[in-house]
Length: 319
Image 1 (cartoon, rainbow, N blue to C red):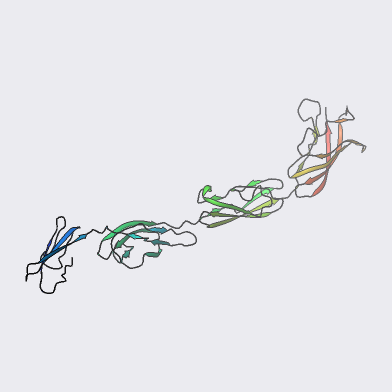
Image 2 (image 1 turned 90 degrees about the horizontal axis):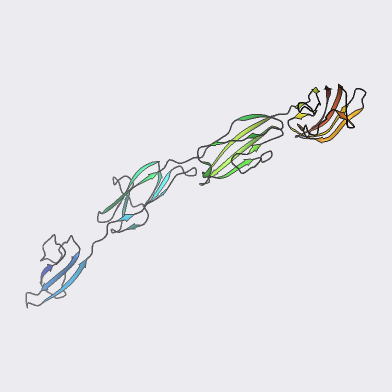
């Protein structure tokens, strides 16, 4: 406290308080106190006995407090940053420490922090402190893996099944390129059905904008597969009653013909689907059952890659 008088000359001073506390003498101009309260000064002129009083209220400052912000590392910045934020309470200027008070500086932002625990301390001009602990996380780097390659036959499809180091829900976007031959290009696990060897790249992006990529090669066995039975028995017993062609990777049997041994056509169908027994040949000609014999068949077949080939063979009818 600092007392004074506007009257010239030597004065006597006397301090009192009902609720505070003095830590030095009370009969001096500038006593020291260590508690809030109302302090009253009585100034007396020894020469004439005149006196006057005045009071001052001492309030306690709240201790410093702060709420730090942590900018966690990610794929774009591999180290963390701590900002002490706005300081309330105490008295400025403030000093800052990120090592538990071992060292202080006037900088309220600490950068280039490795992953770990940091004890933050704020100290005001009176030496009052506030402390808290923050955690800087290990930077999360997304990863995705796919098989190196997979082999399929023409007309087959395969599920592309990536393995990630995070839940699917944490992925902001899925991007498969190229989109040709895929059931979808923006889903986690598309079906791939390329007609020729292909390479697909998956790019995943997480909520922080971090990317991970993986590539898979799909090899396509383009051998033409077509199976034709060499014997059938159209006797309505529900077993092997129809002659048709079986295939994979075929979009259309443009024409299937059956001829007798003299070359006469006894059956013809166009645009037959492979594996379709219902629309195959039932061993009749013009509504009449044919006798057991060996017949010749010929088919014009279109495959999924656009190739068209002619196949032929013989079929034995038995009853």
